[in-house]
Length: 307
Length: 307
Image 1 (cartoon, rainbow over the protein chains, first blue to last red):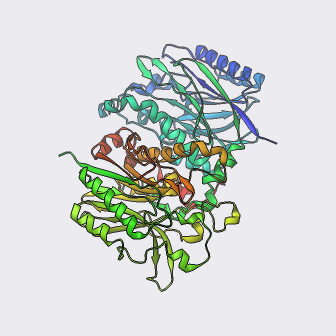
Image 2: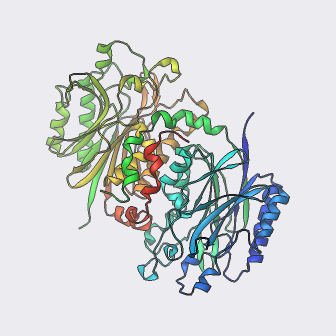
Image 3: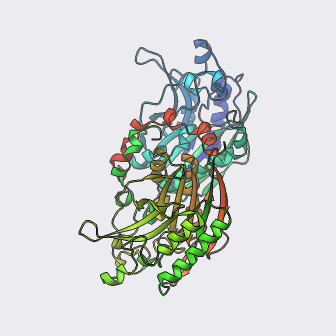
């Protein structure tokens, strides 16, 4: 029998710093309802879907910083989203800032959780490729993620979602071919991605017009080269004075854009993903077992930078 | 001072089985003259630029097979190309079928040599990702490369070409992200590629309309993700009854198509590649030393196929 998974990408417009968690969760529940009404079986929300993209600011005070983080997931304010999922029978992937005190030390991660259509936790991913720097003076005023987040320490896990193998990634992860390859080797059929991408690049204004091209190019290549479905949700629009690109999309294992948003607001796009297309695409070019040369790729896992 | 390398892609139309080596070398010399007239400093020719793409046929007889191979490079018939390079002061990368008897055993490789503007050999690459099968009955009538070629055994070398770091790749290699990553980690600034790509896919006719998209997508992503210039030369047109796609191109480290052919014939395209653009692109997203996580990528170098 043909296998399908109907995927919804739930893009959000800006989530201003002034918004309460309750207001934001209201918006996410409304998006989830629209996804469920379109018969979607899983939804993906943006990276840091519960707050403004705060790494654009340089903050010192722990209390001020930790107001952007979740210590429990679900917590008091987010529980409604999980209850909505169970009621609507649609799971989701949600990006948020995670405060982990389980080791006795405070650790902060840029995290995405996968939740099942019963509203129960399935698995967690912590962003592996944290961009930017730690100080605004480094000239990376829009990317202070390394100030606030530790590097992901959970590998590139692939989870069983109702019989479909699903991997997760966040924002900058999508630019690195290793992300898709690790998930592809992990057996992923679907990769769910959340992102926040500023339109303006302080570091290279001459490349600004290529931001959307550079959003889609590595995701389309990653889908094609690993024969996976990719579904990616942006947080978009003018958020606290900073313009974020949209371009949320669903990409087939052929690399084709199957669906794409046309706004910078809260918007849902849905595609019924044909999982059997994966085997067709794999057969043509990408029989990994037959054609890859892992012993020849050692440098990739040995060295960070160029020789 | 700004660094540039003016690159010529020398696409060829079909090279029929009935053509003599002398006739074919005449065409390559004519292309090299056009490249030099356009002030190019290096030219790239297709994969198997001296013969028809013979792996479309199932052959048994060693003499019949070896008529497509070169035992010496340059040999008697190819020497003129090297002499033209020296006279015109333009080097080249040339794809050909290599017969290596140096070990006492006959070995056959799908090979590309890099030759300097003095007409002297710089370095050799042997195709790492050999597609297709060994028997026509496997349903891969257009891809019997594994019948005729051993797997490349020279790694992914990067050569010094007049002060520019140049890597080589052949056809199917361009679809695998590891090719570009290995060359990028090897310090490549420019990647020269030759290919022969049939328009019709026996294995998946439903993907036929995507052949050109699947030609450019992984090369554009490879250029972007490794901040290298990519220049790729096709053998194109109706060759011995089989239609080969063209689409030869020069791609910037931004992933943008900087130049592209518009024919399926012998055609030269030239672009003055700004090598300083590499550092600009690298700074924005791809500071490998700072952001890559090699210890997290071990599976890529350990396993061929998915878990």
